[in-house]
Image (cartoon, rainbow, N blue to C red):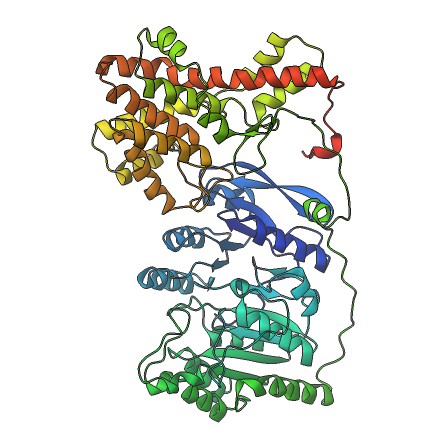
Length: 630
Protein backbone atom coordinates (compact mmCIF):
# COMPACT_ATOMS: atom_id res chain seq x y z
CA UNK A 1 0.00 0.00 0.00
CA UNK A 2 2.32 2.77 1.29
CA UNK A 3 2.40 5.66 -1.25
CA UNK A 4 0.92 8.83 0.26
CA UNK A 5 -2.17 10.99 0.29
CA UNK A 6 -5.41 9.28 -0.77
CA UNK A 7 -7.80 12.23 -0.44
CA UNK A 8 -7.69 15.86 -1.53
CA UNK A 9 -9.92 18.92 -1.80
CA UNK A 10 -11.10 17.72 -5.22
CA UNK A 11 -11.85 14.11 -4.21
CA UNK A 12 -15.36 12.98 -5.10
CA UNK A 13 -17.20 9.89 -3.95
CA UNK A 14 -20.06 7.62 -4.94
CA UNK A 15 -22.39 6.87 -2.03
CA UNK A 16 -23.98 3.40 -2.00
CA UNK A 17 -27.36 2.85 -0.28
CA UNK A 18 -28.83 6.32 0.24
CA UNK A 19 -28.67 7.74 3.77
CA UNK A 20 -29.68 11.39 3.99
CA UNK A 21 -27.86 12.42 7.18
CA UNK A 22 -24.31 11.22 6.43
CA UNK A 23 -24.49 12.62 2.87
CA UNK A 24 -25.72 15.98 4.12
CA UNK A 25 -22.93 15.99 6.70
CA UNK A 26 -20.39 15.43 3.95
CA UNK A 27 -21.83 18.33 1.96
CA UNK A 28 -21.90 20.60 5.02
CA UNK A 29 -18.24 19.76 5.64
CA UNK A 30 -17.48 20.62 2.00
CA UNK A 31 -19.07 24.03 2.46
CA UNK A 32 -17.25 24.54 5.75
CA UNK A 33 -13.92 23.84 4.02
CA UNK A 34 -14.62 26.11 1.05
CA UNK A 35 -14.76 23.36 -1.54
CA UNK A 36 -15.92 24.49 -4.97
CA UNK A 37 -17.61 21.19 -5.85
CA UNK A 38 -19.59 18.76 -3.66
CA UNK A 39 -17.68 15.68 -2.52
CA UNK A 40 -20.65 13.41 -3.35
CA UNK A 41 -20.81 13.05 -7.13
CA UNK A 42 -23.59 10.47 -7.24
CA UNK A 43 -25.76 8.12 -5.19
CA UNK A 44 -26.28 4.43 -5.94
CA UNK A 45 -29.62 3.06 -4.76
CA UNK A 46 -30.42 -0.32 -6.34
CA UNK A 47 -33.77 -0.18 -8.08
CA UNK A 48 -33.98 3.61 -8.07
CA UNK A 49 -32.97 6.32 -10.50
CA UNK A 50 -33.42 10.07 -10.66
CA UNK A 51 -32.15 12.85 -8.41
CA UNK A 52 -31.93 13.45 -4.69
CA UNK A 53 -32.25 17.02 -3.41
CA UNK A 54 -29.71 18.09 -0.78
CA UNK A 55 -28.03 21.30 0.33
CA UNK A 56 -24.56 22.57 -0.55
CA UNK A 57 -24.31 25.57 1.75
CA UNK A 58 -27.29 27.80 0.94
CA UNK A 59 -27.76 26.27 -2.49
CA UNK A 60 -30.11 23.33 -3.04
CA UNK A 61 -28.55 20.85 -5.45
CA UNK A 62 -29.76 17.73 -7.24
CA UNK A 63 -27.42 14.76 -6.88
CA UNK A 64 -27.95 12.02 -9.52
CA UNK A 65 -29.26 8.67 -8.29
CA UNK A 66 -28.22 5.52 -10.19
CA UNK A 67 -29.58 2.01 -9.88
CA UNK A 68 -26.28 0.22 -10.60
CA UNK A 69 -22.63 0.63 -9.64
CA UNK A 70 -21.41 0.31 -13.23
CA UNK A 71 -23.75 3.04 -14.47
CA UNK A 72 -22.69 5.40 -11.67
CA UNK A 73 -18.99 4.88 -12.36
CA UNK A 74 -19.52 5.52 -16.05
CA UNK A 75 -21.49 8.70 -15.36
CA UNK A 76 -18.95 10.01 -12.84
CA UNK A 77 -15.47 8.93 -13.97
CA UNK A 78 -13.67 11.36 -11.63
CA UNK A 79 -15.33 9.90 -8.50
CA UNK A 80 -12.71 7.46 -7.19
CA UNK A 81 -14.00 6.79 -3.65
CA UNK A 82 -16.84 4.31 -3.01
CA UNK A 83 -18.60 4.79 0.34
CA UNK A 84 -20.59 1.65 1.08
CA UNK A 85 -23.49 1.93 3.55
CA UNK A 86 -24.94 -1.47 2.61
CA UNK A 87 -25.82 -3.93 5.38
CA UNK A 88 -23.35 -6.65 6.36
CA UNK A 89 -25.36 -9.09 4.23
CA UNK A 90 -24.67 -7.32 0.94
CA UNK A 91 -21.64 -5.14 1.71
CA UNK A 92 -19.10 -7.64 0.39
CA UNK A 93 -20.75 -8.17 -3.01
CA UNK A 94 -21.28 -4.46 -3.65
CA UNK A 95 -17.75 -3.64 -2.45
CA UNK A 96 -16.24 -6.21 -4.80
CA UNK A 97 -18.30 -4.84 -7.68
CA UNK A 98 -16.92 -1.38 -6.89
CA UNK A 99 -13.32 -2.58 -6.62
CA UNK A 100 -13.61 -4.08 -10.11
CA UNK A 101 -14.47 -0.69 -11.58
CA UNK A 102 -11.37 0.96 -13.10
CA UNK A 103 -12.36 4.39 -11.78
CA UNK A 104 -12.64 3.34 -8.13
CA UNK A 105 -9.46 3.66 -6.06
CA UNK A 106 -10.72 3.57 -2.44
CA UNK A 107 -13.60 1.51 -1.01
CA UNK A 108 -14.96 2.28 2.47
CA UNK A 109 -17.14 -0.39 4.15
CA UNK A 110 -19.22 0.94 7.04
CA UNK A 111 -21.05 -2.28 8.00
CA UNK A 112 -19.90 -4.37 10.93
CA UNK A 113 -19.96 -8.15 10.84
CA UNK A 114 -19.13 -8.76 7.18
CA UNK A 115 -18.27 -12.47 6.82
CA UNK A 116 -14.52 -12.92 7.32
CA UNK A 117 -14.10 -15.06 4.21
CA UNK A 118 -15.66 -12.31 2.11
CA UNK A 119 -13.43 -9.67 3.71
CA UNK A 120 -10.31 -11.72 2.93
CA UNK A 121 -11.31 -11.88 -0.74
CA UNK A 122 -11.78 -8.11 -0.81
CA UNK A 123 -8.38 -7.57 0.79
CA UNK A 124 -6.66 -9.91 -1.65
CA UNK A 125 -8.28 -8.27 -4.67
CA UNK A 126 -7.46 -4.77 -3.43
CA UNK A 127 -3.80 -5.63 -2.85
CA UNK A 128 -3.47 -7.32 -6.23
CA UNK A 129 -4.94 -4.27 -7.97
CA UNK A 130 -3.27 -1.53 -5.92
CA UNK A 131 -6.50 -0.31 -4.33
CA UNK A 132 -7.38 0.69 -0.77
CA UNK A 133 -10.08 -0.78 1.47
CA UNK A 134 -11.05 0.99 4.71
CA UNK A 135 -13.21 -1.10 7.04
CA UNK A 136 -15.35 -3.12 7.56
CA UNK A 137 -16.85 -1.75 10.80
CA UNK A 138 -15.45 1.72 10.25
CA UNK A 139 -16.83 5.23 10.50
CA UNK A 140 -14.41 6.12 7.69
CA UNK A 141 -11.86 8.88 7.69
CA UNK A 142 -11.19 12.54 7.10
CA UNK A 143 -8.64 14.83 5.52
CA UNK A 144 -8.97 18.10 7.38
CA UNK A 145 -10.12 20.96 5.20
CA UNK A 146 -10.58 18.71 2.20
CA UNK A 147 -12.76 15.56 2.36
CA UNK A 148 -14.61 13.42 4.88
CA UNK A 149 -16.41 10.11 4.74
CA UNK A 150 -20.02 9.91 5.92
CA UNK A 151 -20.46 10.49 9.63
CA UNK A 152 -16.76 10.83 10.44
CA UNK A 153 -16.19 13.37 13.24
CA UNK A 154 -19.90 13.66 13.97
CA UNK A 155 -21.75 16.97 13.97
CA UNK A 156 -20.62 20.30 12.54
CA UNK A 157 -20.15 21.57 16.11
CA UNK A 158 -17.68 18.73 16.76
CA UNK A 159 -15.85 19.40 13.50
CA UNK A 160 -15.45 23.08 14.30
CA UNK A 161 -14.35 22.34 17.85
CA UNK A 162 -11.75 19.88 16.52
CA UNK A 163 -10.59 22.41 13.88
CA UNK A 164 -11.09 19.87 11.12
CA UNK A 165 -12.16 22.55 8.64
CA UNK A 166 -8.47 23.30 7.99
CA UNK A 167 -5.40 21.02 7.89
CA UNK A 168 -3.06 20.52 10.84
CA UNK A 169 0.18 18.56 11.13
CA UNK A 170 -0.91 15.28 12.75
CA UNK A 171 -1.68 11.98 11.04
CA UNK A 172 -4.01 9.86 13.16
CA UNK A 173 -5.06 6.25 12.73
CA UNK A 174 -7.33 4.24 15.00
CA UNK A 175 -8.07 0.55 14.97
CA UNK A 176 -11.61 0.94 16.20
CA UNK A 177 -14.41 3.47 16.06
CA UNK A 178 -16.09 2.28 19.24
CA UNK A 179 -15.72 3.43 22.82
CA UNK A 180 -12.74 1.81 24.57
CA UNK A 181 -12.07 0.87 28.15
CA UNK A 182 -9.18 2.91 29.53
CA UNK A 183 -6.44 1.55 31.73
CA UNK A 184 -8.55 1.96 34.86
CA UNK A 185 -11.30 -0.18 33.27
CA UNK A 186 -13.75 2.73 33.23
CA UNK A 187 -15.50 4.15 30.20
CA UNK A 188 -13.83 7.38 29.22
CA UNK A 189 -16.15 10.39 29.66
CA UNK A 190 -16.20 12.61 26.62
CA UNK A 191 -15.93 16.33 27.41
CA UNK A 192 -17.72 17.45 24.22
CA UNK A 193 -20.84 16.71 22.19
CA UNK A 194 -19.97 13.27 20.95
CA UNK A 195 -21.93 10.61 19.09
CA UNK A 196 -20.78 7.10 19.80
CA UNK A 197 -22.44 5.85 16.65
CA UNK A 198 -20.34 8.20 14.54
CA UNK A 199 -16.89 7.49 15.79
CA UNK A 200 -16.61 7.11 19.59
CA UNK A 201 -12.93 7.22 20.45
CA UNK A 202 -11.92 8.51 17.02
CA UNK A 203 -13.98 11.64 17.71
CA UNK A 204 -12.47 11.90 21.17
CA UNK A 205 -8.93 11.74 19.80
CA UNK A 206 -9.72 14.35 17.16
CA UNK A 207 -10.74 16.62 20.02
CA UNK A 208 -7.72 15.71 22.14
CA UNK A 209 -5.28 16.30 19.29
CA UNK A 210 -6.90 19.66 18.50
CA UNK A 211 -6.43 20.76 22.13
CA UNK A 212 -2.69 20.12 22.31
CA UNK A 213 -1.49 20.42 18.67
CA UNK A 214 -2.38 22.37 15.56
CA UNK A 215 -4.85 19.63 14.64
CA UNK A 216 -5.36 16.70 12.31
CA UNK A 217 -4.07 16.53 8.75
CA UNK A 218 -5.64 13.15 8.07
CA UNK A 219 -7.49 10.70 10.30
CA UNK A 220 -8.47 7.11 9.52
CA UNK A 221 -10.45 4.52 11.49
CA UNK A 222 -9.43 1.18 9.96
CA UNK A 223 -12.42 -0.62 11.53
CA UNK A 224 -13.12 -3.02 14.34
CA UNK A 225 -13.63 -6.34 12.56
CA UNK A 226 -11.02 -9.09 12.89
CA UNK A 227 -9.68 -8.57 9.36
CA UNK A 228 -9.50 -4.86 8.43
CA UNK A 229 -9.10 -4.01 4.75
CA UNK A 230 -6.04 -1.92 5.58
CA UNK A 231 -3.86 -1.98 8.68
CA UNK A 232 -2.44 0.52 11.15
CA UNK A 233 1.00 0.20 9.60
CA UNK A 234 -0.42 0.68 6.08
CA UNK A 235 -1.65 4.12 7.02
CA UNK A 236 1.29 5.05 9.25
CA UNK A 237 3.65 4.32 6.33
CA UNK A 238 1.42 6.49 4.11
CA UNK A 239 1.56 9.31 6.65
CA UNK A 240 5.33 8.99 6.69
CA UNK A 241 5.33 9.82 2.95
CA UNK A 242 3.07 12.89 3.29
CA UNK A 243 5.21 16.03 3.80
CA UNK A 244 2.43 17.93 5.59
CA UNK A 245 2.21 15.23 8.29
CA UNK A 246 4.88 15.99 10.88
CA UNK A 247 3.93 13.48 13.59
CA UNK A 248 1.72 10.40 13.86
CA UNK A 249 -0.75 9.35 16.56
CA UNK A 250 -1.89 5.72 16.76
CA UNK A 251 -4.73 4.27 18.84
CA UNK A 252 -4.73 0.46 18.86
CA UNK A 253 -6.58 -2.08 20.94
CA UNK A 254 -6.19 -5.49 22.48
CA UNK A 255 -6.80 -8.52 20.31
CA UNK A 256 -5.16 -9.52 17.05
CA UNK A 257 -1.56 -8.73 16.08
CA UNK A 258 -2.00 -5.79 13.73
CA UNK A 259 0.10 -3.52 15.95
CA UNK A 260 3.15 -5.77 15.53
CA UNK A 261 3.40 -4.90 11.83
CA UNK A 262 3.85 -1.31 13.02
CA UNK A 263 6.45 -2.48 15.53
CA UNK A 264 8.43 -4.12 12.70
CA UNK A 265 8.19 -1.03 10.52
CA UNK A 266 9.58 1.08 13.37
CA UNK A 267 12.42 -1.36 14.04
CA UNK A 268 13.35 -1.43 10.35
CA UNK A 269 13.60 2.35 10.26
CA UNK A 270 10.78 2.75 7.72
CA UNK A 271 9.21 5.52 9.78
CA UNK A 272 11.21 8.67 10.44
CA UNK A 273 8.50 10.79 12.05
CA UNK A 274 7.57 10.79 15.75
CA UNK A 275 4.92 8.18 16.59
CA UNK A 276 2.83 8.52 19.76
CA UNK A 277 0.82 5.38 20.40
CA UNK A 278 -1.47 3.75 22.89
CA UNK A 279 -3.14 0.33 22.82
CA UNK A 280 -6.36 0.33 24.84
CA UNK A 281 -7.77 -2.57 26.80
CA UNK A 282 -5.20 -2.86 29.61
CA UNK A 283 -8.06 -3.63 31.99
CA UNK A 284 -8.62 -7.00 30.29
CA UNK A 285 -6.22 -8.66 32.76
CA UNK A 286 -8.74 -8.01 35.51
CA UNK A 287 -11.01 -10.62 33.93
CA UNK A 288 -10.38 -14.30 34.52
CA UNK A 289 -11.56 -15.39 31.07
CA UNK A 290 -11.44 -14.04 27.53
CA UNK A 291 -13.55 -10.90 27.15
CA UNK A 292 -14.74 -9.17 23.98
CA UNK A 293 -15.03 -5.39 24.07
CA UNK A 294 -17.66 -3.99 21.69
CA UNK A 295 -16.85 -5.72 18.40
CA UNK A 296 -15.19 -8.71 16.78
CA UNK A 297 -11.60 -7.45 16.80
CA UNK A 298 -11.42 -6.22 20.41
CA UNK A 299 -11.02 -9.52 22.24
CA UNK A 300 -8.62 -10.32 25.04
CA UNK A 301 -6.80 -13.54 24.20
CA UNK A 302 -3.17 -14.68 24.55
CA UNK A 303 -0.38 -12.60 26.06
CA UNK A 304 0.92 -11.41 22.68
CA UNK A 305 -2.50 -9.94 21.96
CA UNK A 306 -2.79 -8.14 25.28
CA UNK A 307 -2.70 -4.36 25.42
CA UNK A 308 0.27 -4.43 27.82
CA UNK A 309 2.41 -6.56 25.49
CA UNK A 310 1.60 -4.40 22.48
CA UNK A 311 2.31 -1.16 24.34
CA UNK A 312 5.67 -2.50 25.51
CA UNK A 313 6.59 -3.72 22.02
CA UNK A 314 5.77 -0.31 20.52
CA UNK A 315 7.76 1.40 23.26
CA UNK A 316 10.77 -0.85 22.68
CA UNK A 317 10.56 -0.16 18.92
CA UNK A 318 10.87 3.60 19.46
CA UNK A 319 7.29 4.87 19.64
CA UNK A 320 6.30 7.23 22.44
CA UNK A 321 3.95 5.19 24.60
CA UNK A 322 2.54 6.74 27.81
CA UNK A 323 1.99 4.81 31.02
CA UNK A 324 -1.79 5.12 30.81
CA UNK A 325 -4.55 6.39 28.56
CA UNK A 326 -4.90 9.41 30.84
CA UNK A 327 -1.31 10.33 29.98
CA UNK A 328 -1.88 9.95 26.22
CA UNK A 329 -2.84 13.60 25.75
CA UNK A 330 0.27 14.80 27.56
CA UNK A 331 2.51 12.58 25.45
CA UNK A 332 0.97 13.94 22.23
CA UNK A 333 1.49 17.50 23.46
CA UNK A 334 5.10 16.88 24.42
CA UNK A 335 5.95 15.37 21.02
CA UNK A 336 4.26 18.24 19.19
CA UNK A 337 5.92 20.96 21.32
CA UNK A 338 9.31 19.41 20.63
CA UNK A 339 8.73 19.61 16.86
CA UNK A 340 7.72 23.24 17.21
CA UNK A 341 10.89 24.00 19.20
CA UNK A 342 12.99 22.31 16.52
CA UNK A 343 11.35 24.48 13.87
CA UNK A 344 9.82 21.53 12.06
CA UNK A 345 6.28 22.85 12.53
CA UNK A 346 5.23 26.40 11.80
CA UNK A 347 2.09 27.98 13.17
CA UNK A 348 -1.07 27.21 11.22
CA UNK A 349 -2.94 30.27 10.05
CA UNK A 350 -6.31 30.20 11.76
CA UNK A 351 -9.35 30.85 9.62
CA UNK A 352 -12.95 31.51 10.57
CA UNK A 353 -15.16 28.86 8.98
CA UNK A 354 -18.40 29.97 7.33
CA UNK A 355 -21.64 29.42 9.17
CA UNK A 356 -23.68 26.48 7.94
CA UNK A 357 -27.22 27.63 7.07
CA UNK A 358 -29.84 26.21 9.41
CA UNK A 359 -32.53 23.97 7.96
CA UNK A 360 -35.95 25.62 7.76
CA UNK A 361 -37.75 23.02 9.87
CA UNK A 362 -35.16 23.41 12.65
CA UNK A 363 -35.38 27.19 12.49
CA UNK A 364 -39.19 27.06 12.66
CA UNK A 365 -39.11 24.76 15.70
CA UNK A 366 -36.66 27.07 17.46
CA UNK A 367 -38.89 30.07 16.75
CA UNK A 368 -36.31 31.91 14.64
CA UNK A 369 -38.47 32.17 11.52
CA UNK A 370 -42.08 31.81 10.46
CA UNK A 371 -43.19 30.46 7.11
CA UNK A 372 -46.63 30.81 5.47
CA UNK A 373 -48.59 27.70 4.56
CA UNK A 374 -49.73 27.22 0.96
CA UNK A 375 -53.02 25.37 1.48
CA UNK A 376 -55.83 25.82 4.06
CA UNK A 377 -57.80 22.72 5.02
CA UNK A 378 -60.56 22.46 7.63
CA UNK A 379 -61.96 19.01 6.92
CA UNK A 380 -59.07 16.67 7.67
CA UNK A 381 -55.74 16.43 9.40
CA UNK A 382 -53.19 13.64 8.80
CA UNK A 383 -50.43 14.92 11.11
CA UNK A 384 -51.22 12.81 14.16
CA UNK A 385 -51.23 9.12 14.94
CA UNK A 386 -54.19 8.63 12.63
CA UNK A 387 -56.13 10.80 10.14
CA UNK A 388 -59.04 12.76 11.58
CA UNK A 389 -62.09 13.88 9.67
CA UNK A 390 -63.54 17.25 10.83
CA UNK A 391 -61.68 16.75 14.09
CA UNK A 392 -63.07 13.24 14.76
CA UNK A 393 -60.39 10.52 14.91
CA UNK A 394 -60.56 7.78 12.30
CA UNK A 395 -61.00 5.05 14.91
CA UNK A 396 -63.91 6.91 16.49
CA UNK A 397 -65.78 6.97 13.18
CA UNK A 398 -65.18 3.23 12.78
CA UNK A 399 -66.47 2.50 16.28
CA UNK A 400 -69.79 4.32 15.59
CA UNK A 401 -70.75 1.65 13.03
CA UNK A 402 -71.70 4.04 10.22
CA UNK A 403 -71.54 2.78 6.62
CA UNK A 404 -73.13 1.73 3.33
CA UNK A 405 -71.71 -1.78 3.15
CA UNK A 406 -75.07 -3.42 2.49
CA UNK A 407 -75.68 -1.12 -0.49
CA UNK A 408 -72.30 -1.99 -1.97
CA UNK A 409 -72.95 -5.67 -1.31
CA UNK A 410 -76.06 -5.50 -3.43
CA UNK A 411 -74.82 -3.19 -6.19
CA UNK A 412 -71.40 -4.67 -6.66
CA UNK A 413 -71.70 -8.32 -5.76
CA UNK A 414 -75.44 -8.78 -6.46
CA UNK A 415 -75.94 -10.64 -3.20
CA UNK A 416 -76.39 -9.87 0.45
CA UNK A 417 -73.18 -10.55 2.26
CA UNK A 418 -72.99 -11.40 5.99
CA UNK A 419 -72.87 -8.43 8.35
CA UNK A 420 -69.20 -8.92 9.15
CA UNK A 421 -68.44 -8.59 5.41
CA UNK A 422 -70.44 -5.40 4.95
CA UNK A 423 -69.03 -4.00 8.17
CA UNK A 424 -65.53 -4.66 6.84
CA UNK A 425 -66.39 -2.81 3.62
CA UNK A 426 -67.68 0.13 5.66
CA UNK A 427 -64.50 0.21 7.68
CA UNK A 428 -62.41 0.21 4.50
CA UNK A 429 -64.41 3.16 3.12
CA UNK A 430 -64.04 5.17 6.31
CA UNK A 431 -60.33 4.46 6.50
CA UNK A 432 -59.75 5.38 2.85
CA UNK A 433 -62.10 8.38 2.59
CA UNK A 434 -59.38 11.00 3.02
CA UNK A 435 -55.78 11.38 4.04
CA UNK A 436 -55.28 15.09 4.27
CA UNK A 437 -54.71 17.93 1.79
CA UNK A 438 -51.12 17.06 0.90
CA UNK A 439 -51.51 13.79 -1.03
CA UNK A 440 -51.65 14.04 -4.82
CA UNK A 441 -55.39 13.45 -5.34
CA UNK A 442 -56.57 15.97 -2.76
CA UNK A 443 -53.96 18.50 -3.91
CA UNK A 444 -55.25 18.26 -7.51
CA UNK A 445 -58.85 18.69 -6.37
CA UNK A 446 -58.00 21.74 -4.24
CA UNK A 447 -56.08 23.45 -7.06
CA UNK A 448 -58.94 22.78 -9.52
CA UNK A 449 -61.60 24.06 -7.10
CA UNK A 450 -59.57 27.21 -6.47
CA UNK A 451 -59.53 27.78 -10.25
CA UNK A 452 -63.33 28.14 -10.11
CA UNK A 453 -64.10 24.79 -11.75
CA UNK A 454 -67.25 22.82 -10.92
CA UNK A 455 -67.55 19.88 -8.54
CA UNK A 456 -67.26 17.14 -11.19
CA UNK A 457 -64.12 18.70 -12.74
CA UNK A 458 -62.51 19.10 -9.31
CA UNK A 459 -63.38 15.54 -8.32
CA UNK A 460 -62.13 14.00 -11.59
CA UNK A 461 -58.85 15.94 -11.41
CA UNK A 462 -58.20 14.16 -8.12
CA UNK A 463 -59.41 10.76 -9.28
CA UNK A 464 -57.11 10.86 -12.31
CA UNK A 465 -54.07 10.68 -10.01
CA UNK A 466 -55.15 7.25 -8.72
CA UNK A 467 -52.89 4.62 -10.27
CA UNK A 468 -49.83 2.48 -9.61
CA UNK A 469 -48.18 5.13 -7.42
CA UNK A 470 -51.25 6.38 -5.57
CA UNK A 471 -54.04 4.21 -4.27
CA UNK A 472 -53.79 1.59 -6.99
CA UNK A 473 -51.95 -1.12 -5.11
CA UNK A 474 -54.90 -2.90 -3.50
CA UNK A 475 -55.71 -5.06 -6.55
CA UNK A 476 -52.05 -5.83 -7.16
CA UNK A 477 -51.50 -6.72 -3.50
CA UNK A 478 -54.47 -9.13 -3.58
CA UNK A 479 -53.39 -10.61 -6.91
CA UNK A 480 -49.79 -11.27 -5.90
CA UNK A 481 -50.58 -12.50 -2.38
CA UNK A 482 -53.26 -14.85 -3.73
CA UNK A 483 -51.02 -16.26 -6.45
CA UNK A 484 -48.13 -16.82 -4.04
CA UNK A 485 -50.29 -18.40 -1.33
CA UNK A 486 -52.21 -20.64 -3.75
CA UNK A 487 -48.96 -21.86 -5.31
CA UNK A 488 -47.58 -22.68 -1.86
CA UNK A 489 -44.63 -20.25 -2.04
CA UNK A 490 -42.86 -19.45 1.19
CA UNK A 491 -42.50 -15.72 2.04
CA UNK A 492 -38.80 -16.00 1.13
CA UNK A 493 -39.56 -17.58 -2.27
CA UNK A 494 -42.28 -15.02 -2.97
CA UNK A 495 -40.25 -11.90 -2.06
CA UNK A 496 -37.06 -13.08 -3.76
CA UNK A 497 -38.91 -14.05 -6.94
CA UNK A 498 -40.44 -10.56 -7.05
CA UNK A 499 -37.00 -9.07 -6.49
CA UNK A 500 -35.55 -11.04 -9.41
CA UNK A 501 -38.35 -9.70 -11.62
CA UNK A 502 -37.59 -6.17 -10.48
CA UNK A 503 -41.10 -5.79 -8.99
CA UNK A 504 -41.70 -4.26 -5.58
CA UNK A 505 -44.11 -6.28 -3.46
CA UNK A 506 -47.45 -4.37 -3.57
CA UNK A 507 -48.87 -3.68 -0.14
CA UNK A 508 -45.46 -3.71 1.55
CA UNK A 509 -43.61 -0.52 2.51
CA UNK A 510 -44.44 2.89 3.96
CA UNK A 511 -42.84 6.34 3.79
CA UNK A 512 -43.52 7.14 7.46
CA UNK A 513 -44.52 4.02 9.38
CA UNK A 514 -41.96 1.50 10.62
CA UNK A 515 -41.83 -1.89 12.28
CA UNK A 516 -41.85 -0.18 15.69
CA UNK A 517 -44.52 2.39 14.68
CA UNK A 518 -47.23 0.49 12.91
CA UNK A 519 -50.02 2.07 10.89
CA UNK A 520 -53.08 2.38 13.13
CA UNK A 521 -55.34 1.62 10.16
CA UNK A 522 -53.66 -1.72 9.55
CA UNK A 523 -54.00 -2.66 13.22
CA UNK A 524 -57.72 -1.83 13.22
CA UNK A 525 -58.37 -3.93 10.13
CA UNK A 526 -56.43 -6.91 11.44
CA UNK A 527 -58.11 -6.74 14.84
CA UNK A 528 -61.56 -6.68 13.25
CA UNK A 529 -60.79 -9.58 10.92
CA UNK A 530 -59.32 -11.80 13.62
CA UNK A 531 -62.43 -11.25 15.74
CA UNK A 532 -65.03 -11.67 13.00
CA UNK A 533 -63.71 -13.52 9.93
CA UNK A 534 -64.01 -17.34 9.87
CA UNK A 535 -60.59 -17.57 8.25
CA UNK A 536 -57.72 -15.10 7.76
CA UNK A 537 -55.26 -17.32 5.86
CA UNK A 538 -54.36 -14.68 3.26
CA UNK A 539 -53.87 -12.00 5.90
CA UNK A 540 -51.64 -14.29 7.96
CA UNK A 541 -49.63 -15.02 4.84
CA UNK A 542 -49.23 -11.28 4.28
CA UNK A 543 -48.06 -10.93 7.89
CA UNK A 544 -45.49 -13.70 7.31
CA UNK A 545 -44.29 -11.82 4.22
CA UNK A 546 -44.06 -8.65 6.34
CA UNK A 547 -41.99 -10.50 8.94
CA UNK A 548 -39.50 -11.46 6.22
CA UNK A 549 -39.37 -7.99 4.62
CA UNK A 550 -38.89 -6.34 8.03
CA UNK A 551 -35.72 -8.40 8.40
CA UNK A 552 -34.41 -6.47 5.38
CA UNK A 553 -35.56 -2.93 6.25
CA UNK A 554 -37.64 -1.42 9.07
CA UNK A 555 -39.93 0.51 6.71
CA UNK A 556 -41.02 -2.60 4.76
CA UNK A 557 -44.20 -2.97 6.81
CA UNK A 558 -47.58 -4.18 5.69
CA UNK A 559 -49.39 -0.99 4.62
CA UNK A 560 -53.10 -0.31 4.36
CA UNK A 561 -53.24 -1.40 0.68
CA UNK A 562 -51.73 -4.76 1.58
CA UNK A 563 -54.02 -5.16 4.57
CA UNK A 564 -57.21 -4.46 2.59
CA UNK A 565 -56.08 -6.60 -0.36
CA UNK A 566 -55.24 -9.68 1.72
CA UNK A 567 -58.31 -9.36 3.97
CA UNK A 568 -60.63 -8.91 1.00
CA UNK A 569 -59.36 -12.26 -0.29
CA UNK A 570 -60.24 -13.78 3.10
CA UNK A 571 -63.68 -12.16 2.90
CA UNK A 572 -64.35 -13.63 -0.55
CA UNK A 573 -62.95 -17.08 0.23
CA UNK A 574 -64.19 -17.36 3.80
CA UNK A 575 -67.79 -16.30 3.21
CA UNK A 576 -68.47 -19.39 1.09
CA UNK A 577 -70.54 -17.29 -1.30
CA UNK A 578 -68.08 -17.07 -4.20
CA UNK A 579 -66.60 -19.68 -6.49
CA UNK A 580 -62.90 -19.68 -7.26
CA UNK A 581 -63.67 -18.38 -10.74
CA UNK A 582 -65.71 -15.51 -9.31
CA UNK A 583 -62.95 -14.59 -6.88
CA UNK A 584 -60.39 -14.50 -9.69
CA UNK A 585 -62.75 -12.37 -11.76
CA UNK A 586 -63.41 -9.91 -8.92
CA UNK A 587 -59.71 -9.38 -8.33
CA UNK A 588 -58.99 -9.18 -12.07
CA UNK A 589 -61.74 -6.67 -12.87
CA UNK A 590 -60.57 -4.21 -10.22
CA UNK A 591 -63.27 -4.37 -7.54
CA UNK A 592 -60.72 -3.69 -4.81
CA UNK A 593 -59.37 -0.54 -6.40
CA UNK A 594 -62.99 0.43 -6.97
CA UNK A 595 -63.39 0.38 -3.21
CA UNK A 596 -60.58 2.89 -2.93
CA UNK A 597 -62.01 5.11 -5.70
CA UNK A 598 -65.42 5.18 -4.00
CA UNK A 599 -63.96 5.90 -0.59
CA UNK A 600 -61.58 8.61 -1.75
CA UNK A 601 -64.33 10.36 -3.72
CA UNK A 602 -65.95 11.27 -0.40
CA UNK A 603 -62.87 13.16 0.69
CA UNK A 604 -62.25 14.77 -2.70
CA UNK A 605 -65.80 16.14 -2.78
CA UNK A 606 -65.34 17.47 0.74
CA UNK A 607 -62.14 19.29 -0.23
CA UNK A 608 -63.98 20.90 -3.17
CA UNK A 609 -66.74 22.25 -0.92
CA UNK A 610 -64.19 23.37 1.71
CA UNK A 611 -62.22 25.52 -0.74
CA UNK A 612 -65.41 27.08 -2.15
CA UNK A 613 -66.69 27.88 1.36
CA UNK A 614 -63.38 29.54 2.19
CA UNK A 615 -63.46 31.46 -1.13
CA UNK A 616 -59.82 30.59 -1.71
CA UNK A 617 -58.15 32.43 -4.65
CA UNK A 618 -56.38 30.92 -7.65
CA UNK A 619 -53.45 28.82 -6.47
CA UNK A 620 -49.99 29.40 -7.90
CA UNK A 621 -47.10 27.32 -6.66
CA UNK A 622 -44.28 29.51 -5.24
CA UNK A 623 -41.14 29.53 -7.42
CA UNK A 624 -38.88 29.31 -4.36
CA UNK A 625 -40.33 25.86 -3.71
CA UNK A 626 -39.05 24.58 -7.08
CA UNK A 627 -35.52 23.39 -7.79
CA UNK A 628 -34.64 24.76 -11.24
CA UNK A 629 -31.91 22.60 -12.70
CA UNK A 630 -30.64 21.41 -16.04
